[in-house]
Length: 298
Image (cartoon, rainbow, N blue to C red; front, side):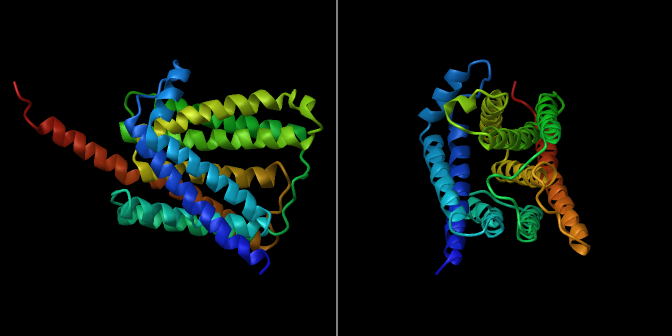
């Protein structure tokens, strides 16, 4: 067996990574409140939570499996296999963690998985680890991702935003900032020639982006609905990474009808990301109205 072995390895990576996300959500809910102004206290509090630590260990195992799959199978096949992770997310959340998913959420998860799988399988011959880029385009895309992340973070701070919606916005911000970090890491390693190469303008981008994304992701898992938060974080991270591959690193978009098909799939995934938390928002409003209508004890 050749590259076909990479498919079950990639599926295993997706399964373990999503299981780790759900464990981290359970750990974040039990941990002290995330406070950006007290970073060390927050980090210690999170990792003192058993399930958060177990979730991070699972995430590390998932990452190693991902790397292993990339060493066996073509990139497009690996990414398509990882896209099915949304199905794993729904099944694990319902069967093992007691979350109840509505039909709309299941539809969104399936559409996102199908759209991302199509984008991966139709990518064609993508560039390898030494893909080229133009510095102005890379800076512009990085600035865009940081701007999107900052906008979502500020939107999450608005008082009129419901608590559940705040978690989803923070998850989306984390996804955008993770992409900014990955692009910066790509720029950092592109010219890597020993430890001195780390003294680069991309180093602070990677470090700051990773730290902010860490806290945004932790807080989103702490206060938001688990499945929409995890799904939206992944969707935003995957779609923006795909866009970065096309815009920054000159990955092929396709030719003829394939261009329109890939753009349509990309739009579908973005629409799913926007609509997936909708029922949560409506449910929260009804819950608040019911609470307000209940007579309070005197």
